[in-house]
Image (cartoon, rainbow, N blue to C red):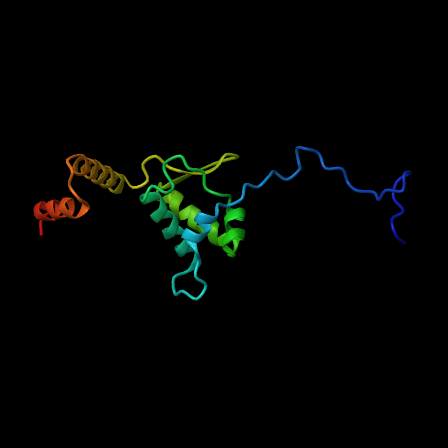
Length: 151
């Protein structure tokens, strides 16, 4: 027999308290989905594609320190992969100290993920700034660097 509803004829529905209501999910930026674009036919496992894609974005400062990453479920849905795929990528990045998972606050890019890589990136940025200030082109600055770099 069908539910006749309450006294006013409306169907009986369980009340959802604000404490148990689902939180608003922030959409995953389109540029991030494009940058991570998981290729299903690739020989590289999907979690590894996500992990290396995020690592590349972090190293290129497209995801700077303190950037909040999308939730596992949101990123998985946006990429068309399982939540376990994204969870594994996040877990491996956390084990490498590249990101930090904070309960109830989400996953953020950590301060000193790869110390040597971060130091090299900072030195390269400083060198590029000095070369630019002195009026050198990228080609000229690169030539100077190659001349002093040990073979």
